[in-house]
Length: 291
Image 1 (cartoon, rainbow, N blue to C red):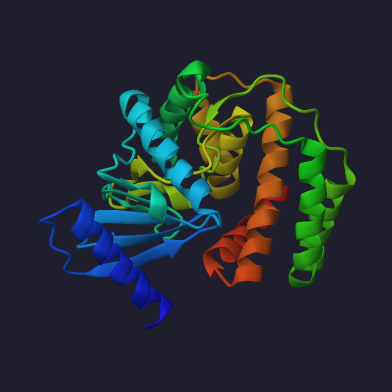
Image 2 (spheres, rainbow, N blue to C red):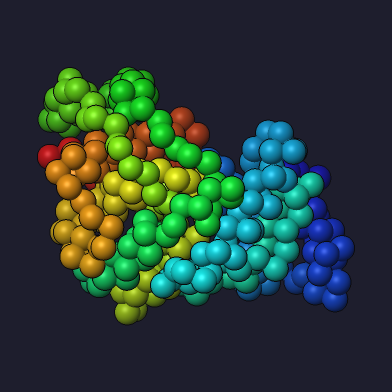
């Protein structure tokens, strides 16, 4: 039995045990990121398994995420997953499938229409009182100087794949000093790439936000940075028109810094692992992001 067949059998076993009476007809693999692998059951239930190496760590992570999602369902203006099954010992969390398709693979005809809901969504997250979530998520205060060193390593991996003009843009960025670290942290999704934003393509509407594995008390500029990286400056500008979290000049500088570091990380990860969408999107957006 190969790995995929073994996982399908594991999902059937878990659902039979924890959701008695639920008939499993078909299991499809949705995709895999750095933290999780996701599967769809009967076209209606998403089953996600943590890829963390330690079983205790996996179990604690899914329990915290389930508790966090309960909080978010009260405050988020956009739909978020609502777990119906949490199996800590297997590192598994399952929830009814949200409507819509991942934005990274299904671009919308009018991306400007995404801005208002994303601005309202990020406002709700970034103004959520930290004590409500501080026992459920870590603090992510990674020094920007260290992040720049990681970006330099990522660039070393991918430089040979870039044309000379793009290499010059990246090297100019890496030659500059990292911005000062943020003074204030808020609750953040902390991985708001377009792969985690669901959309109705026909109406260019946001239908949900998924994958809260990396949620943290962190720099709110990072959430906005991924909007910039994946959707570009025009959508970011419109998003900020609906954003109530505040963004001063220092935060804007960090936003650009994060976007560029995150893009290099995605390209390197995609090329290293063969997960093409990460590399393809990063390479397509590199000139725009570094200009």
